[in-house]
Structure formats: C-alpha cells, structure tokens
Image 1 (cartoon, helix red, strand yellow):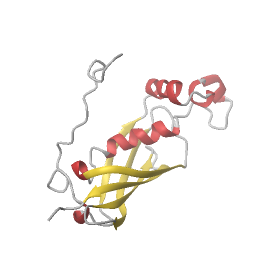
Image 2 (cartoon, helix red, strand yellow; image 1 turned 90 degrees about the vertical axis):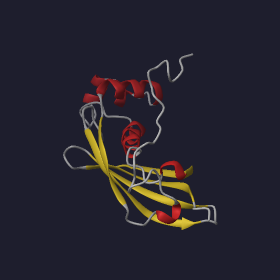
Image 3 (cartoon, helix red, strand yellow; image 1 turned 135 degrees about the vertical axis):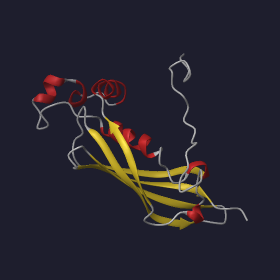
Image 4 (cartoon, helix red, strand yellow; image 1 turned 135 degrees about the horizontal axis):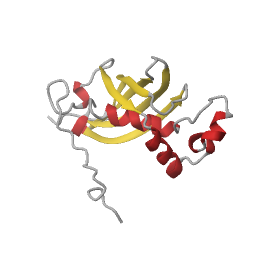
Length: 166
C-alpha cells in the first residue's frame, strides 16, 4: 500500500499569515470578511482519473458519449470541481489552526465545468453563531467562476471554530 509520502504528496500544514496572524478565533471573525480564492485549473487527465475512481459515468469518461449530450463534451465531476476550488480556498482560509471540525456543506452546481477551465472565486463569512464559551459555528459561502466570469458553483460550509480561552 502506498503511503502519502510514497506518492509524492506533502501533507498540508498551514504556515501562511491570515490578516497578520496564522489563524483566527471565532471572536476575531466578522460577517462579510472575504478572501479571493487563487485559480484552480481543471486538468483533463486528472478530471478523467477522478471520474474513473469516484464518479464513473459516461458524461465524465466517454468522449463520444459526451459529444452527443447537450454539453457537447466531457464535463468534470461536480465534487471534483468543488474540491479543486476548496483546496485553493485552504490557501487563504480564515480559520487555520483554530478549526475544530467541519459541521456541514452544501454545494450547488450552476453551470458545467470542462477540462482546461480555470476556476477562481471568493470566500466570504456569511454567518456567525456562538454555541458556548468554547466554540462557535462559522458559515463560509464560496462562489466559483470559470475563466469567462460565469458562476459555476456555490458552496455553503459550516465549521466549528475555537473561541479564545480567557
């Protein structure tokens, strides 16, 4: 069995600064705080590989079949499109090491994503609910656009975030 290290993947460790520090506690986060998400390129080979492993339907894997659909060509699996944006969001993540856990996520796919599309986006804090003295729920809304400026997906994720311990 190949390990992460054997596959040449380096585990992600946040070492960047967010608003001048490594992470933000619940009390430091504000509604409407926003960050631009760096570009994510949807590479055809990776798109097909993902589909073969996780969403093996002809619309994602069979070019001849896809040409006969209203899309006219292969489209990226929706979850792959979202995860391609999500991993780029993590480069500008508001919460960092103060994240305790994910709570929920809702993805809406608005337009198809194709091979070689370049997705960019914006992440914004859209709700904050303090649960107790130890943590609160942070709602982050992501809007992702293709290189034509078309909205292709939205995501609303709720995360459990540490409060400052005084």
